[in-house]
Image (cartoon, rainbow, N blue to C red; front, side, top):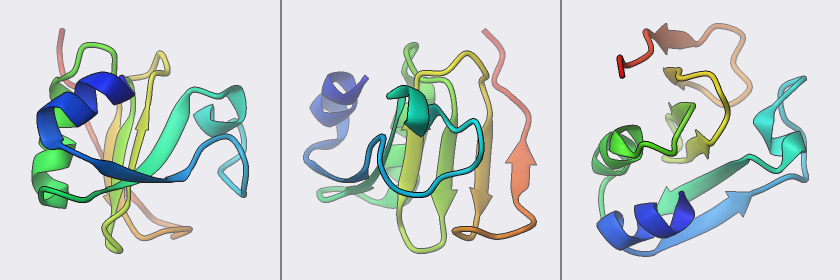
Length: 95
């Protein structure tokens, strides 16, 4: 997924993989998720490209410009504040 993403949006800065603090049962702990910041495009465009990839499961973006992408089974998207109690979840895209 990372290779496909970088090929379409340019370089990214990966800020988190499987370490750190994440939600309970996070895809990060399974080695299936990254948090990143796009370096050559907007957050909005990077999220749109990530959603279009067949290998992507969950996509999330945060107000600080970070993006979460995983290859988990659930197809879900959200926008919210980092560690916020209430996040806005969007319906999964159809395939």
